[in-house]
Image (cartoon, rainbow, N blue to C red):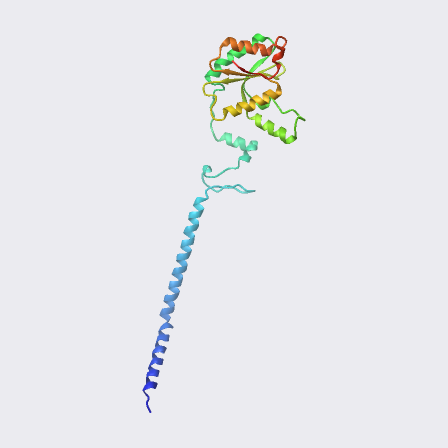
Length: 244
């Protein structure tokens, strides 16, 4: 009987057992777990670095109820503008800075003011000249002329506008509005701002006088006197845009 094939089979079986024994060796298990731990550590480190980069991009703070801004410079974060409606927050903001005086009128307007005051005084009707007057303080939308929403929108549109000079009567009502069109007047959207003023004044029946930079003294005196003496110039009660 030939035992050659059985012998070869036995050798292959023994070789397989040796390889299985090597794979199950304790040293191989240790290497496997070590490699696994290193892989997990590297993955966690990568995720942590990625999270730090994304958090650095979000430097703003969105205020929520009962929340506080994170530590850091205030300039790095957005503040809630609605907070400034609270006088306490206004006081806090004012207390953090210094203030200085500024000119109410520029040099050209300052030269025009005495002329207006003298002309108004000569009219002798008790009128006074006011400078840089809020249009919303001397005009208001007429109640009942439109819807409540329209009245609010109209008031908001004029409330931020200012008149260079306002002539008021002895009762404090606006008699005449004066705009000085100086050398740098028409810049940006100044033309549209003036258009809003003119329309509001026209609807209120208030004369509107535009004074150019090359005005003549006698022209100013004549036009203002004509407006402030209604008994002699009854036709001047309506709105009139006057170019001196």
